[in-house]
Image 1 (cartoon, rainbow, N blue to C red):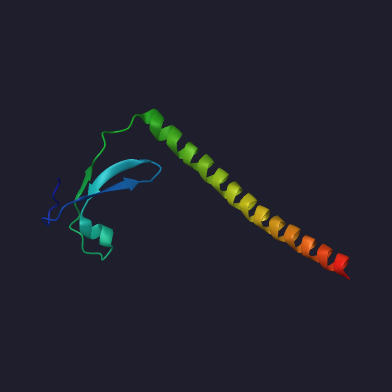
Image 2 (cartoon, rainbow, N blue to C red):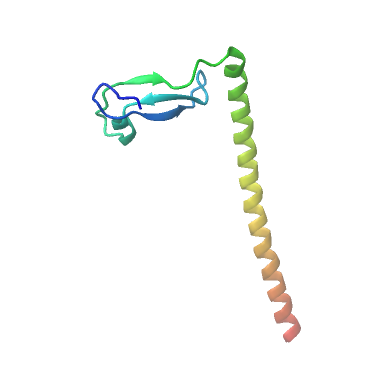
Length: 98
């Protein structure tokens, strides 16, 4: 258990900056509450990353984000097409019943 300067128990957060992607660190629990009154404590949780990892991880994260966005667009189109299919079947049945 790590204590910060104000005596509170620290929490572990994850950095997603281009320089430290996925690198975990300790910070004051008051920072997590975002009330603006943290003591400024900061300490790395993980050992330093190799330069190659720092170069590769941002590209992988970008690729993942692009794929996630494509998936979201396709899921929306799929839902819309299912609604159109049901609507055409309903209209077809109404036409047959007349």
